[in-house]
Image 1 (tube, rainbow, N blue to C red):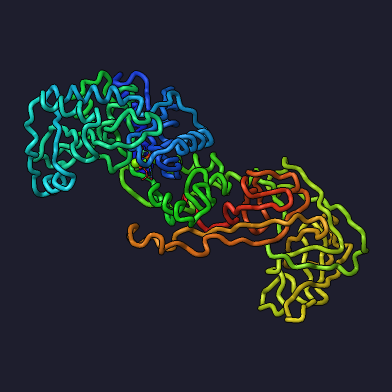
Image 2 (spheres, rainbow, N blue to C red; image 1 turned 60 degrees about the vertical axis):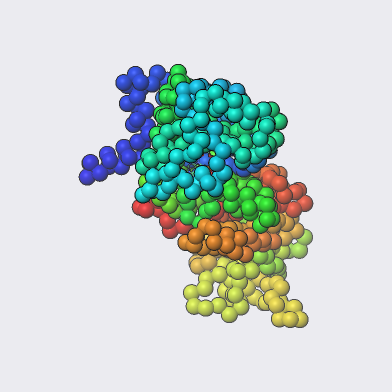
Length: 557
Ligand code: ATP
Ligand code: MG
């Protein structure tokens, strides 16, 4: 038993264990990590996992974390993304030590490539992309050597300089590492180091028309910054020998090491910028920060807190094998975070007018209500009550089934924080639709009065009609319907047509000062966030973060 727990603890922290060892043995003097996003989209919950891992490790061991934009692919990159990524990392609660761009190293990367050529470790290759692919071989067959592999150093230096000078069109030549076309690791079969791309770069403008490949730029950038532990996701495991090759052959002074962990996947959640971008570009969602998006900005707008996201990332652990995390885990942590903090108030989503016929006309009284039944420190508030209120239309049934304890003709229920009321009459329009109820109240039953002559089984919530504030309530479902299918198969056909439903209703007047980002628990409906973009004083817009309950307990999963 003891062993099992130990194993669990160490496997969920295997990178931390490596760091501890390295600090102990003296291989590492100070831990330096980095988070290296490509500025080609907004960050998503998968990135949050990597951010928390890198920043929290460094924090724990008095180390440093750099933010480095891996901006080596100018066609897809933009400063909009650079800014958004910084905002999101700060919002998550982290501040980087160094702010860097791989493009800051373009000159040094070029010089190191020249060094590789001089050492006979790199060559300019004229094969087309297709020929290169054909000659790469397969897992079972070795690749074929390029006919340009044995060019002289002088010719390579000349051609590489002319590539840089812009003499050749896109795709005509590349610089390749000279490693081993027969290597069982395909990554080592003379990988491309530089490509020609006459593309404007968001930082370096038109200074460059050759750009380094990720597999070359990444290790060298890590080494330049003195990164000690370069943490990436599992699909880069095969690239590690190339990572080490580049650092050794480029004669970098510092020797970072790469460690891989399993990327985060969450049920019902698309976790790839490529697809998220498609949703934005096709107008399926209202931008990168649409509350349905698994982006950090979308989750923030929906109402997730940074604390909940950090706790989620920490609790799910760091693993060496790919797995799928249940989205209800994340929901669990946001409920846990808001449970004691959020003001618990009443909102009516599909309102039905109730007229309390024996309540004096023109009279309003104020009733006491606790702000959070589980947290006395949050105090109390006063809510108005009068002759006209709204209740949920779902809390009334004209012909109820057995065991329906809410309102129906002749039945008595408790109004939360107020009185018992009894339904006397159902008012309908000419089409037979119920438009209002006439009820009576019993003054003796006021909440807090200790009344105990009769019991009622149902308690319903309400808001006073004349002062209620109109609001839109956005309720969400997953954006994608079926995740079992291949991602590439008609991705846009899998969009859930009811991922967004908007209900109109009312909230208590006490909420008049709520501003974007304020979070509430609405009785029975769940946790809601005031939408920071669309909510206005005349009409609130609330995003449902999560419903109140789930049977799911992550500690038992
Ligand atoms: P995407 O496929 O969504 O575009 P990416 O890996 O291409 O993701 P980058 O900007 O290159 O995005 O990623 C920056 C860092 O975030 C990398 O270190 C990457 O490993 C990490 N990362 C990206 N997605 C995940 C994920 N789902 N889980 C954990 N880490 C991730
Ligand atoms: Mg990437």
